[in-house]
Every structure is written in C-alpha cells, then in structure tokens.
Length: 322
Image 1: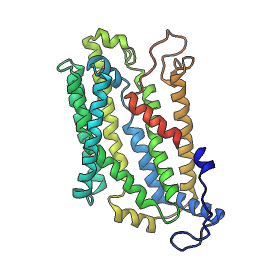
Image 2 (image 1 turned 60 degrees about the horizontal axis):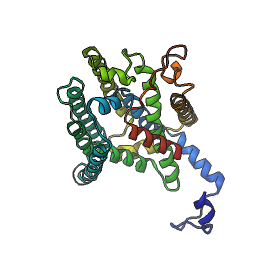
Image 3 (image 1 turned 60 degrees about the vertical axis):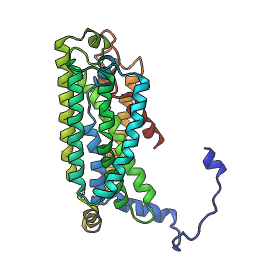
Image 4 (image 1 turned 45 degrees about the horizontal axis):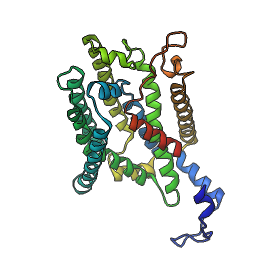
C-alpha cells in the first residue's frame, strides 16, 4: 500500500525503447495471445506439474529431523547459512561450465543426485545407524549446488518465454505456477500419508521408536522418492535449450483451448491448495479426512506435519505474496 500511494511515476507516452506505449486493450490482447500459445502451455505444465508430483513428500520428514536426528534450531540455521553460500557457488558453476548443457539432462542428473543423497542420510537416521544432528544436516549443505542448477533452469524458461512488453506477466504466471505446486503437493501428501499406520504424524510413535514403525517411516520415504523420480516424466514438456524454446514459440500453434486450460488449471490448484492447507491448520477442521486427518468422529491426533517447517512457511509466504 505504501509503494502504491507514495511512489509517483510520470505516465510514459513513449517507452524507453522509443516505441509508443500499449493501450490497455492492446496489452490484454497480447496477454491472451500468449496464454493460448501451446509453447507457453507446455512451460506452465512443467512449472506446475513437476513440483506437484515431485513435492508429494512424506509427512514424517520433520519428525525424523526433530525427534530422531535431534536437530536444534541454532545448528539448523547455521547449516542453512552455509548452504546458501554453496548455493551461490552452484550458480557460478552453472554460469561458467553448464550454461549450454541440455536443461533436461541437467535437471535429471540433479534430481537423481538430490534424492540419492537424501536417501543415504535419512535411511541411516531412521534405522538408528547414525543419529546425530551434524550428520543429518550434512544433507542441507550437499544439496545446495544441484538445487542452484534447478533454480537457474527455471529462470531460463521464464526468460525464453517472455516477449517485449509482457515480461512481468510471464514472470508472474510462471512463478505462480511453480509456487502453487508446493502447497498443492503438500495437500495431496497429507491425504496420502494419513493411511500409513502407525500414524506418521504422532510424536509418540517416534518416541516409542519400534522396529515396525521404523519400517513404516522408511516405506513412506521410499514412496516420496518414487514421486520424485516420477516427476522426471514432466521433463517432456521442457525444451532442451534456448534454441528449442524459441523454435517452439515461433512454430507451435496457438488455440484458445490452451488459454482456458491455463486459467482453469491454476485457479483450481489455488483454491484446492489453500482450502486443504488452511483446513489442516484449523483445530476444528484438521481432523477431517479431506484435510488429511483420520475423521472427526475419531480421537484427535497430532495434525499432519507439513514437511520441513521453514520450507512450508516460505512457500506459503510466496504464494500469498503472488
């Protein structure tokens, strides 16, 4: 509100490039032309479906981190800081060495690496081979470089899909599609993982720490990795490199059905994810099966964990900002 009221800009009749500014109707026409492009529709499908499928992760991850690995908040923040520094190194590596590498190959290799590393640390922690917070947090540091590669590729897609004059629209739609994927996947995950018994969301089961429950948790992690590898199928919608992205924009057809599909898909995802996630946070509705509970006619249980709490809060914040 402050920026809207206090920042004054002179109305530009002519843009910085010397061209006459677009009228409102002309701009909306350009936006609709973009939305009904098959190339843009494929890009939206990838940005949305990849995190939706790959983000269906076990609700046990935060409990394993807190109760079995014994991770403290200070150590967690320190390792996150080191991870952010390595993220910068990852960006530099992509810029200097892998800028022209196939986006599909880059994402496939990094996705496999991320899940193999996670499986190593998680499995040793689940079966009480090594339960040490510094060991468990080592994953936080190792995964940042491949995560940087994923981030760069997502940015490249946005740049290649944008045309002169609609950069803001393209950025807004594609980042919204990507950010919607996480809460949508979390909502689906809450409903899937509630069927695991004993309950993955009850802290008492982690305190009892029986062998049978360890296997239950391990199987939930295996299912998470299965979803992550299944998300690699969405690479079909992703162009291999910049040249192919530009070729798609120029040669692929445009049809209103693609525009309607974009609008309907993102609208349903927004409504569904917000509804389920808010219901899972409210004491009066978290017990409902639709929200991932066991049913309100049963005894109340601990609400489903939303994965890593910091990632969940960051994703929700980005979604609300958009």
